[in-house]
Image 1: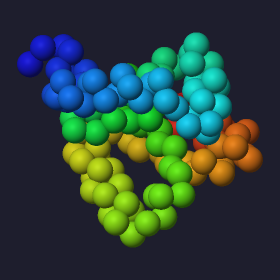
Image 2: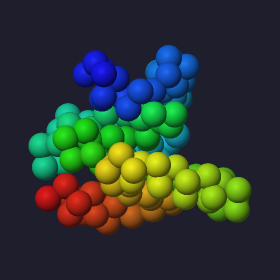
Image 3: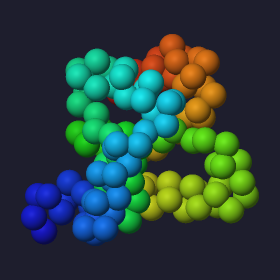
Length: 123
């Protein structure tokens, strides 16, 4: 397995291309959180946005600590989407990747608390 494949957990070319498109179309909450994560602002950690992992795309990813941060919109309240998210998180856990989830509302209205939680997990 090449280092690139390990870094992206064997994500397909299609997933890689989709991630690239998503980077250009972030939600307001994702943009706000990205502003706080980019440039190693969280305890010197280098986060990536819209990072391919296997057949999924993580909103934000810190590779060294295997940490995914997800920004969930209202559609994540849908029972089918909740089930999908549960299965997705289980797959991430199989790769020993931790997943933190925040709602759009949390990011837009309680950003300080969100950042504190991320800092706690990052050490």
